[in-house]
Length: 116
Length: 114
Image (cartoon, rainbow over all chains, first blue to last red; front, top):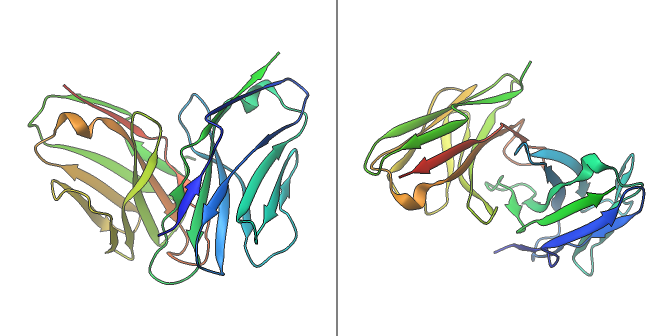
């Protein structure tokens, strides 16, 4: 079974600085997808970024980028120029490609606090 | 317009009661899901429906029953509520079951069983 591990329960960063959140996963599959979701205090789950395993190029979305290391099964999220609104829980998630399994498998989350 | 909506947002009830949570999506998606987030914020899949057929049931007690009157709706009915059912329940939807489609989440329903 696939598992997702986020080893940092909590992190903090100063506004305007850069922070990296770690995520590792375990799978025997070759084709899959990886996601980062953000959950602010409002509780809403918001997609931050996604990565297809077959793509070597790291995904980027404005201030958010990933470092995808397939061989190491690592998928870290880098947030540049951190803003107060980035304060949230961040969840790394895995999804198999194809088959009958379409659900997301989540890590336990990292609580990020951006300090002014 | 809200893409995925859930009602109610908060639900407080007594042990032993039966309750339902409604979910609707206006994205035209074929697949809908229910996730449970426990008190430690851990999210886990409960069910998914694809074209009105149950695809996944992850060892959820049979007190929980998803019902889909059409592909835009997936309701969650819970019988004989227990203290351990207290959690936040999220509905989500995606265009396809497989293929890495992004799942869009509703705002969640916080259930408190007293």
